[in-house]
Length: 328
Image (cartoon, rainbow, N blue to C red; front, side):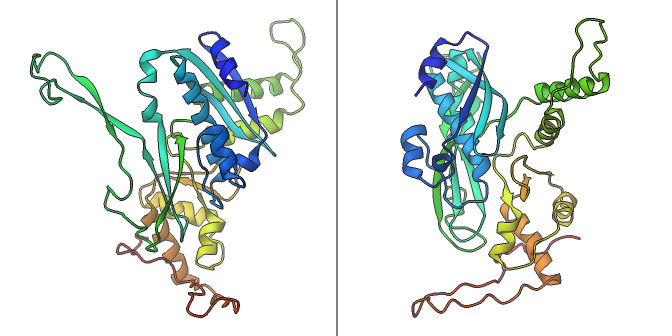
C-alpha cells in the first residue's frame, strides 16, 4: 500500500529498497490474494516459485511507476529466508514508459511436466512510414517503432506441450527484464574483498574500516548472483524434472555439461540449490533426461490403488519428443 506514494515522492534517479514478506501470496499458496495485491497470477506448485515471486513484485512496481511517467531499473533482486528484497532505481522517463510492455511477459506452464514458455506482452520493430501504412510522408524519411502483440505457444505452433501433450496453464504477467545490474554487483564484490584484505586498516590513514560481520555471507550471495544468466527468466528444477520420470537425480555437473556441449548456456540460481537456469529449449532439456534414463533406467512407479477405475495411475516413461537423440 505504500508503493504508490513512495514511487511518486522519490527523486529522479533515487534508489528504493522494497521488502515483501507475504511469500504465501507471491509463492502461489493464495493466488487470488497475489492477483489482488500485485495484479499477477502465480503458477502453483511450479519449480521456479522463488524467482517468480521477484518477477511478480518487479512487474507490480514497474506498473505503478509507469502511471507517473517513470521507469525502474533493478539493481539487485534477491530471495532471502522468508522474504524477497529488491533494490530499484527510479527514473523520470516518459519515453521509456512506452517500452514497458517489452519487459513484461506471460507465463505458460505445462500441467504434466516442468516445461514452460515465457512470451513477451509485446514486441517492437523499426519500420518505414510506407510499411506502417502511412502514405503522406516520405517513406525514406525515418524509421519508427511499431509495437505488436506478443505471441503465445499456440501462435508458435505448440498448442499443447510437445513433450507430454498436456495443456498449458497461464501465469503472470511478470517482469522479464534483468533482475540485477551486474556492474553494481561486481563493484560490491570488489569492495567486500578489499575490506577483508585491509582487515580494518584504512589505506588513506583515516578512520579504520572494519569488515562487516556478514561479509562472507554477502560475498557468497553476490558472487552467486553475478553468475546467473541475466537474460533468461525463470529456471528448471532438477529434482522436479527427475521426479517427473521417477528417476534418480542427475548429477548437476553431468546435466550442465550436456547442455553446454549442446551449445547452450547454464547457470544456477542464488536461492534454489536445485535450480538450472538455461537458454536451452524444453525439448533439449528433456533430451538430456532421456539420455540419462537410457543409462540409468528409472524404477517402475507404484500404482496408487486409490485411483478410480479408468483413470491413468501415471507413468514414469520420459516425455516423448521427435528430436530425442542427444549428441554426446
